[in-house]
Amino acid sequence: MFLLRIPVILLALSMHEAAHGLAAYKLGDPTARNMGRLTLNPLKHLDPLGTIMMLVFGFGWARPVPINPRYFKDHKRGMALSAAAGPAANLLLGFLGLFCANLFWFIVTRSGLIFEAEGALYANTNSAFVANLVTYTHLFFYLFYMLNVSLGVFNLLPVPPLDGSRIFLSFLPANLYFKVMRYEHIIQIVLMLGLWMGFLDVPLRAVVSFVMRGMEWLVGLIPIF
Image 1 (cartoon, rainbow, N blue to C red):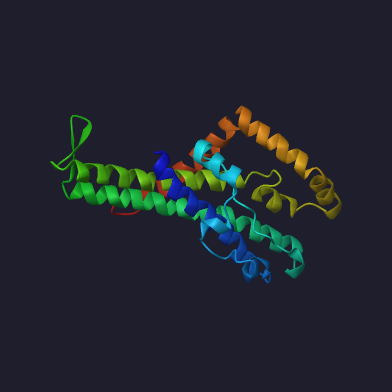
Image 2: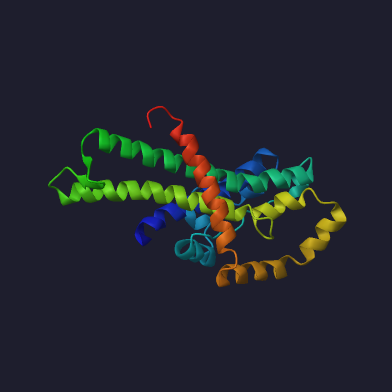
């Protein structure tokens, strides 16, 4: 499970940050492009602590992509759209992971490689390699789904410095916006303590479960499933 998480997290975090940079670039800000952040190369994006948090707890972050709102015609709208691009990318990746997991399972069960007997699943092969390949491929897709949804939901929290705060604060008057931003570092410490002590576990899991149920319902509408 730990080894399977590594490529998933590298892609999830890289796609998240590249989406921020691409959205900002499309809105007129070339900062991320000029700094080489419009890439899926994880070495350009990873934050050591955020990556460890993602590996261990399923919630984490990468090194923020620099965005200069002075390039935007509408500063607040530009910041909100750029911030929303990262979580949106992860939610789309999560949906893709769920679709691939279901499609893969559909193929292996219809092919007879996996069969059900007395409520249990069995591999219809004498090859341990093939059986393990099927098991871990399906698990990889499901982890890809779960971790991307978790990352997307976590970053939509309206708490600085997460992306949700950039979206939420864009709707505040300028005087309130700057008052909140003065305490960004304190709020960040409180957020870290809340995660460390588990205070946010229940609400985060509830929201993630809600989003996952919605995605599973949507995938279930696809005729082949």
